[in-house]
Image: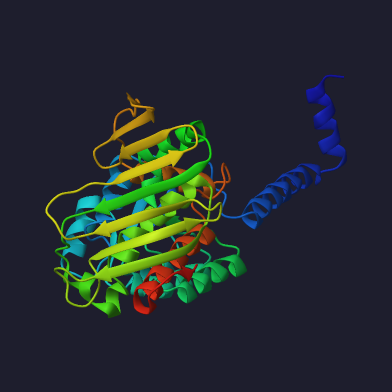
Length: 364
C-alpha cells in the first residue's frame, strides 16, 4: 500500500487523527516559543523593534544609524520633550511620545535605547526592567555608585538585559591597542587623556541633571577603556579637579591611577580648549605603545625605533555596538558591555571625586 493510501486509511478509521496531529504540532510550537521566551527575548527571525528615549545630539545618532545602517532593527518610536520630537518622528517614519513612560509601555517596542541626562537614568531603567524590555543605556550609567548598583540589581532580578553604551571600546585604535598590549610584556606604567572642546549644553553644568562634570561624562570612557584594555581593575586613585569655564561642575580632572597588578599611570580629561585629542601610552617590560584614538594613529616603540601600526579605516562606533547588542538579545552572543562593567567604571569616577574633595589616595 502506498504511503498516501495508508494515510487516507488511517484518517478514515480515526477521523480525529488529523486534528490530533495539528494540535500536537501547535503544542510543540508553543513549547519552543515558551522555551525561547524563558531564555530571554529571542527573536532571530524578526527585526527588533526599537524605541529611543532622548533624541538630542547623541540619541539622534542612534536613530539615524538604525534607520539607515542596521537592517536587524526597526525604529518604532522616539521620545523627546522638545518641539523637535514630532519633526524627527516624521523624518524617521516612527511614533513620537512626549512622555517617555508611554514609549516604554508601547507593546510594539521590544527594546529601548536611552541617551539622557544621567540623573534620569535610574527612573528609565527601572521602568524598562519592570516592563521586561532590554535597555541599551548611554554612558554615564548613573550619577553615583548607589544608583548604578541599584540599576544593575534591578535588571538582574527581572532577568532582563542591561547594556552600557561605552562606545570607545569599538574605536579601531582601542581595539588594536588591546590586541598589541601582550607584545610589550608586563605593564609597568601608562598615561591616557581625552581633551574636548568646552560643552555648549547648559545642563552639563547643572548638578540636578548632569550629576557631575567631566569625571563622569568624559573620564568614564577612559576608565572603562583602561580596564577593558588591560584586563586589570583600577583599585586606587588620587585626583584633582577644577572649573575653568564651568561654574558648578568640574571641566578638568587629573588623576593618578593604580591597577590591581601594581602598574601606575595618569589620566587627564578636560573640556577647556578648542582642540581634541585622545592619547593612550603604555610602557611594558618589552616595549611601548602609543596611540591617539581621535586622530587614528598607533605605533609600537622598541629602543629608539618607532613602528607605525596599521589601524584601518575609522568606523562609527555606534553601529557595531548596536549590532552586538541585538545579537545578544537574539541569543547569538554574550552581552557586549554588561551592567556590572558599567558599575565598575562608575566606581572609579566616584572615587576620583572623593579623592578631589578629601585629598590623597582613595580606594575604589
